[in-house]
Length: 289
Ligand code: GLU
Image (tube, rainbow, N blue to C red):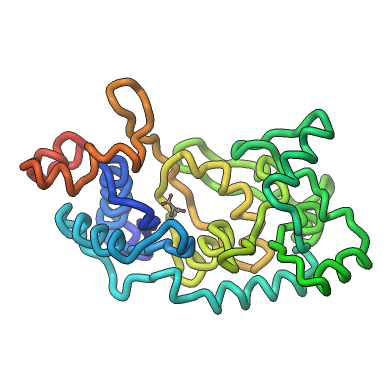
């Protein structure tokens, strides 16, 4: 039965032009909302100002309009909400579930090498917890000396604080493709929630925005499946509802490789410029009305 309360979103990062894989993902989220009589939102995830540009954002809007998508206004532009992310990070700090991390990438790699073994998560080796273990005095002296730091989630404290333990309630989330999932946030470990350079992070901003925008159904690629294990912990910490998730397969090229932004030949703009019609593209993607 249709559910007009459904709200989906497409949330591209303007680090380049959209390609067929993005068109597929956007169409999936759009059609899911439309089939339910619900709302489709567009969000521009441009917090990483080193990699994003407003030219790419304009191109994204043009490409999605070419695809025939219509979205609710205003479009949420993450870079316009940095204050909100900082405020929520402050709230999490007060909850005692964040800690400053002074490590550089090099420090982390060295530490892992020295330890001779490193638990691996889906995003590579997990943070070995170096700064979680430093004394309060050292922490204060480093901050006093002006050392720059990110803020990491203390997963152990976070889990204890949301009351999930062997005797407590389970933290679960629903994936409509793979079924009910028991949260396994240890797959990502003590993730960075506030980056040194941009003052927030993907994990923090995405959870806050899905909450603020009252997204009921997150339709996104299966490459983000493991992130959801952390997102539901952050949602629990912030008292936000966990949406339903639909992690769909990713489009691959003829050689079975995942489509990537670096492959200029398949951008929507280049397809359009070389005369491909939107009908042809939608047909190829299985979305011809
Ligand atoms: N901005 C992310 C990306 O472009 C997607 C985030 C999400 O759907 O949660 O990969």
